[in-house]
Length: 185
Image (tube, rainbow, N blue to C red; front, side, top):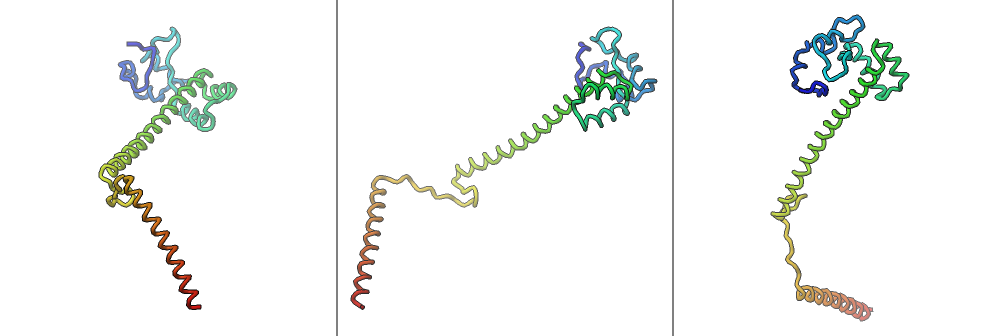
């Protein structure tokens, strides 16, 4: 088992050995840092002398407050925050790096859920359209659609003749009306 890589939500036995208070960062250390976690858990895979340190709830709340205002604090801001919280600047730096990663993962999950919902809606619409096309039903009003058969050359010719005869009839009627008008006058 490789203790060098820590994955959130993993079921490694060394995580289960930590008391809940230590995992939440609420311990009785003088400097507010979870040094007592060192006795219960070695940060395995790191150089000797480096130990896992948990942040207190107060530290996390203040870090979260700053994160809400600025997700990428400058080095001076990190140093000032580290002094204020009684931790090292690199701990602040890594906390912000980890927090940005958690936020990105959370945002991607949320976006994934939205995309899945959109995909389901589009699939349902696609299925409905395919059904409507298959059964020749109007998608808007749900009434049966009458699809004209393909027109033959003969039918097009007859339609052309019909239109020409209708135009000739209209002209003949106009001429006849004009003659009748002239006769009455």
